Every structure is written in C-alpha cells, then in structure tokens.
Image (cartoon, rainbow, N blue to C red; front, side, top):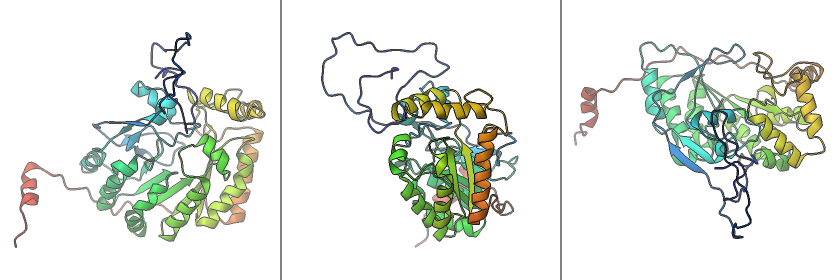
Length: 365
C-alpha cells in the first residue's frame, strides 16, 4: 500500500499514513493527476497471512524487563493502537508500521506444536513465559484461529507458568483454562487501561474493547480467582496522565490486586504516527505533549536506554511516579505479585512415528 493510499476508504483505524518501513529502499507516493474517477472507494479491510514458524520462544536479556522469554501467536495487531511500541517490528516483514501493522496481519497456527517441541527439548530450563508483550494475543482474529487458546493448553498440560498482557475481552473465553492454572499458581494477567474516556479510547485504540468492557474483564477474571494487574499504560502527558488515579481506582474496584504504569514510548516509526495523530485530533495540546516527552528523554522524542525507556526522567516523570506510588498505597494495591510456580513443570512428551501408532489404535468395544 502506498504512503497516502487513495484506493481505499480508511474507517476505524488509528494510523493516518502507511509510510514504507525503514528497511525499504523505495517509497511510493500517489499524485492526483485529475483523471481519477470520482467513485466510492472500497473500505480498507484486514488481511491475514499464515506463517509457519521454525521457532516460537524469543529470549531477551533486557535488565529492565521482568521476564526473559516470550511468545507471539500473531504479528501485527488489529486493535490498531496508534501509540503501540511494537509497530516498528512490522518493518522486518517488509510492511509499513502504519496502516499495514493494523490491517496486514500474520497468524501462526502451528505455534502450539512448535511451543510443545521447544518445551520438550532437553536443554530447556523452565521460567515464566510472557505473552502479549509485542502484539495482543486476544486481538479479533484470535476468535477465528484460536492459536492462543491452543498455546495455553500446551502450557497448562506441561505445568508451565505464563504471564499474559492484553486489552482483549476474548480472554474471558479461556477462563476455564486460566482458572485451573491460577489454582496451581501458574498464571497472572495484566489488563491495560489507557483512559476511562470512551471517546478518547475509540480515537487512539479504535478496535480495542472500550474501557468499561476492559474493567468488566478484570471483574470476570478476578471472580474466577485469576490474579489480575491493572496496567495504566501508556500514560500520555497532558492527555491521559490526569486520569492515573481514577484508572487505578477503577481497576481496584473491579478486582485487580496489583498495578503498574508506563509512560508513552515513541520508538522509530511510532513517533511520526503519534505526532500526526495529535495534530489531527488534539492540535491545541500537541506541542505541549511533545515538549513534556522531550523533557523526559534528554531533548529527544525517545530514549531507549534501559531503566529509562519505560518511565523517562526529570521532574515531570518523577511527579507521575510519585502520584502512582501514593495512589497505589492509598488504594491497597501491590506492585509485585507472588512468584509463579516453576516446580510443577514437566516436559511434554515428544511424539515420534512409533508412538503415534499407539494413539491411532481405536478403543476396544
């Protein structure tokens, strides 16, 4: 798709452009020559490609992350949050971090089998796996593909701990699996709430569940005994950060027992997308928002330095952090959850051609 593509009507999307990724040598730009027929354009629809992954578990050594491994059932995310820091990852596929990220998705239906194989490896050492740290495992296409549910079954059967982050209400479908894992100390869930304002949420997270619906998800999970964290993330200075205390209170009232927050991050292609979005929807405060972000990142729009990238630094960042700490203490929320159990893990059985003979024998009648 071109930079400013006029072949489609863009409805319900956050990104306003589709610039080529940073690895592409060329970028196409459409120019109106006056000969374009004035007809109704088709609506830009979501497309899903299939990928067969050779490996699934991704490892990291980042000292400011609470996990060292993660998996992603999907690439791209139809929730289309304009601020999503995972957008630049779409450039590795030769696609745009703009509209392509939310309309040209990749599903990995073989992920559960690959996960099972990797957990069964002799060299594998158990530690909690994070899901949802890059793209949301409960985005709309999960309803059709059910890859996340199948991955959860693999983890549950193996007694493997998992930490999930999502905005998706579809997680309620999997309460049967998650509830059983919670009783064994194998799961915790973080629900991200950026604002309580439904109109603002629709503008910046056009296909994610409304804030009220996310709070209902917290209520449903907590009611099933699943540990839930309210994640006030990301906080956008001078736009959503005034809601910080109210978000935490709403999460606590819905049943969350833990809390966290992250400041808005603008890595690579995310910065121009967010700045265009601000200029379109909040021109009166766009300059102030960007000024605050630059103050927190040493004059730059983003600083990827470990221990600084999530929160920034300086007076404004410290003020938000202090507000968070005071609110958490007042509301009785905790910062750290109890460690999940790793002692229940048992590697999945490797299925060989010989073993499959036993599974294929029909039961005696």
